[in-house]
Length: 272
Image (cartoon, rainbow, N blue to C red):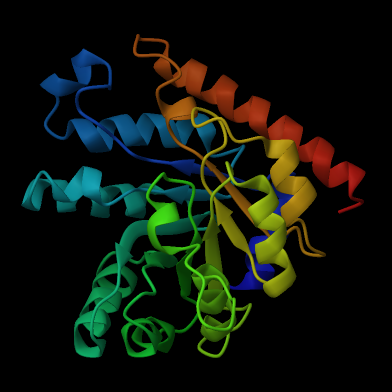
């Protein structure tokens, strides 16, 4: 999907919501476990319930890979089921030497037909650039995450008094453009989003952490907004596990609609 097509969907749906499909067999309604492919059947119901309120879906591949070949098939079927006008993100956090990264890219872009894949940048340029060889596909690079371990490396200061995450942001813009490169920026570091926006003014951000993890949508928009909206805000548990009963799809729809309505208000206030 192109940047222009993504922006058009944001305007059309009055939403910049990404729904995370982190499907855990221990958390979905029990009756799904009797089905041949419980993960796909659950995802299908969630997609049917939320597709009018979001512009992206983000399956975290760990929740699929752990089930072996059957899990990969569930992931493939899920990505194929998502409407074509909705942006799809394989949250795989790959990143290895060049020839290995090229095969990772081929897996997610050609075989699974995802629009984007999350990539870890810490092996440098040759581990990331193979993902840019695919037309109308996106790299979503880890920039500033909100987990506790982020403090171990991302804020390390070098001899030039520059924090490591800022160096990653600056250097990576030599590899891709705002047409094929996004950044992951955690919602629970709201002021950090503003720092990232200063360095990457035109790029889209994928922002996890709103909802169950406590991030504020309003703070994300305040610090991360750009002229094209520039935000995909992800909610996973707060939507797909809004209920574990038979009303799970209705509650997921209600949770997605609630976030979409907040986003519509923000878009209206910004004149977008």
